[in-house]
Length: 393
RNA sequence: GGUGGGUUGCCCGAGCGGCCAAUGGGAGCGGACUGUAAAUCCGCCGGCUCUGCCUUCAGUGGUUCAAAUCCACUACCCACCA
Image (cartoon, rainbow, N blue to C red; front, side, top):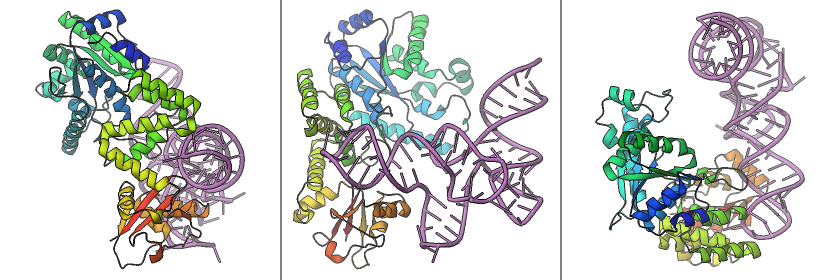
């Protein structure tokens, strides 16, 4: 209930639009309020884009308010409101239910579901399912994100909805609906959609979105994503995602300006977020791995534990002992780091192929038994920083 | 409902019977430079059992020695008229 929550969000450039700022301020200062944020289950995991708005929800909770995370099981089923893909198979229903479950589990790690301002999980399937299909279409139609707000207002006295700035229209429609139907005032706050300095969408790489699920984006890749961020994006990323104090952040911004090469701010960002999502011990492992693999020391000098720990973070493939070792090209494709043999051959031809940090030459090159580190590991590298591992067992 | 235009590789967009795996741009990838950054420059950029072969230009069928290119039908999009 600190009066500075909105000021803090402002400082973080996390506010795109709000309904009347003064009223909102008064509303938030008055008591511990319920507010909600909705997610569409369009994938089995949340990604960094979701995390940006989710972080704001968390800030509200830390300020004493009660967050409601709405996972739109119903929304996920309807999806495309144009109705073009209106035929849904039973399978899809099950899939969406599964996704909703997974997303819930991720939210549980991020919000506090205990205590006096415990977070609440809601699923709009709870109030859309009992409504018959015909009345649903007639009364609610595709506007049910608006309807959700009304329903949460009734059930949880929720009078603030937050979301990405693309949701502004929807949210305000909900505010209006509550005013009309319930004669109560409701509020809205949107968060700017993040973009990168180069104009591309934030949180996407060539290989796709950065997911919170460690099976979809490894903690190592997650950490590296932040560590390798464009210098120009780091300040905003810290503002948006970090829970450090303003003073600490200002220091990092300063370091970014005066000594960008040290990448102190990048590292702080990568550490904090990886810890937040994957836990501190995982972060330590991942960082140790990166240090080992990118260090100037010889890979062969690393002890088995360090090496095997580091390699476990990478895309990898296993080979059985005894079979002849395939070519570098075949191996790198097997790890999944390169998608076709043509692409792998190209990399060799262009001089970007490495085995155990030594450049290799020739498309037919195959590691020998002597190449094995500690008798069972191979470290493949593509270009400057993409690594993969092979283990013989 | 009527008439006309469109559907090309990850995206945009040329091609309009053979020289087309298909111009150009963007994205992506490799190299140089660096800081596991950006900008810049150079190269690559469908797949494979790689001097060749295979699968691509909305779908299906047809004409032809030969089609992304011509014809017919189907689907979707867009424009003008109603």
